[in-house]
Amino acid sequence: MTTEPGGANRHMLEALVCPLTQSVLEYDAAAQELISKPGKLAFPIRNGIPIMLVDEARKLDC
Image 1 (cartoon, rainbow, N blue to C red):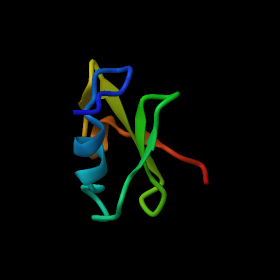
Image 2: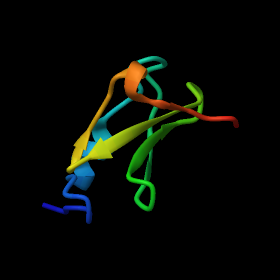
Image 3: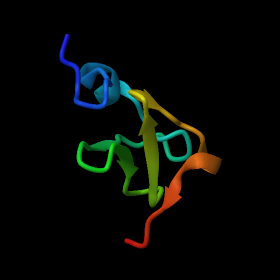
Image 4: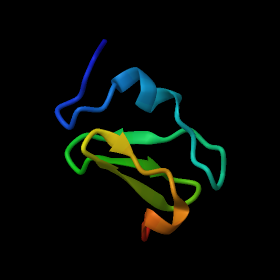
């Protein structure tokens, strides 16, 4: 099992999709976020747990 510094399991993170667009997420290890480019959202990872709620996501400008 591969665990990232924040405590998240890398394989679990790769299996998650954006709850808004169902698109593949990119893992940003430095920011501890999962990025949805189509949804323009960044979902936080807190204590190794991805918070997959649109209301909790940070809006991206890109």
